[in-house]
Amino acid sequence: MKLKITIVFILSFCSFIHAQNLMKSTYNLEGFPEGMDKQKEFINKAISNILIYNFIYGGPGNSQFDLKSEKEFKLNLPLKTPIWLTFPDTKLNSESASHTVHYTYDFKYHDYYDDAAITDSIFSLASLFDLAVKYYDYDEYLLIKNVLQNYNPSINYKEKRPVFFDNLAKILTNTDIDFNTLISEEEQESLTSSEIEELMLDEILEETDYEFEDIVLKVFERFVLDPKDNDKTKQNFIRLFNDENSIKTIEQSVLQPHITVTLPKGGLLHIPEEIALIENEYDTNLVPVSLINIILDFKNKELIISFESKSSNHIRIKKSEYENTISRNKEIVSRKIRLRITASNYKLECIEHNPYISKSEKPHVVLLK
Image 1 (cartoon, helix red, strand yellow):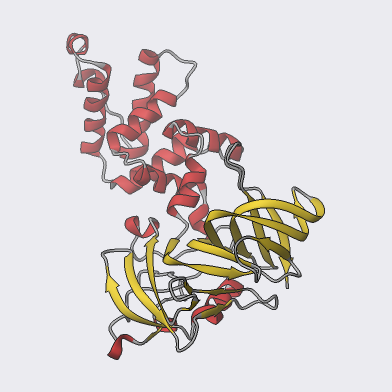
Image 2 (image 1 turned 135 degrees about the vertical axis):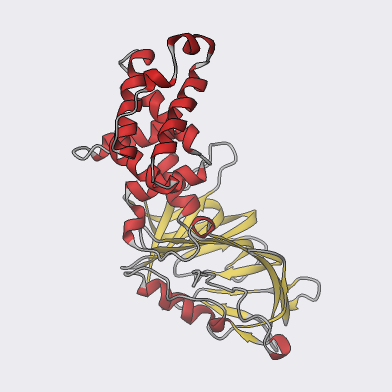
């Protein structure tokens, strides 16, 4: 069954009587890869008893619902350190008994492979290459064109083209194709290089029994992979897609489920004074939250929850680490606080905000209990 890692909520069981749905019935954690038990436990403890109401399906990956409670809605994070999220009603100056939540869910990997399980092998360069072909929307012609462009760059184009297509024909058809009889010299004079390449590839595709996905793998193994040098393989990969960040893009944009939770009325994140002192309009060490971004990093086996504010918050962190340096009573201005759950620990990360410098995500890190 398609993995629906919605951490907070999903679509499957959202039509129970009176729309009072336990969120523990609305997500599937069974598809998590090995080594993520701590993340699954955190998710389950955080939201398993939350009821949702007035569920509205807004299309694939988009929904809205209400959270309700008799007095106040308070989401306690399952940590020894007391950190929680509440939803105030600013009009009544009191805690809200009902709060509307919008969320979007995106996991591009399942756009390509609906039923595939998540395993460590999915992060191999061969698998990433296959996904990159899909993500960058390469067909057979664009793929082969770019491979040819990067094939033996020191050789003249007209010299390397027949060598390249001879090699391609051998790996895809196990036969030799006489391209000289396919296109005469006279015909070549009247055709563009792209047209000649397409005719040569058409002939190979006529003879091969491989489907496109198999062709992609064969191309990777013959023209991209360097069995003795992983770094060279990565460079070949990057050149083929003409994107320095292509590998990172696939790992983050395709292989990480993303959830964005929008809080129309806003929320308040409580940080205990033993960790930091918050200076803003609130007097109880609260950070206003308008957006929550949730990422599952299957490669590094981490759950990352970002609480984002529209306004700046002055924070004095009692003890933190920044780029391997320990600081005490560090004062920063922040609009984002992250919670990172790894296999070994829990981390609170304060991201410094400075409108005059380029965006930086280097955090001031506090280890939590």
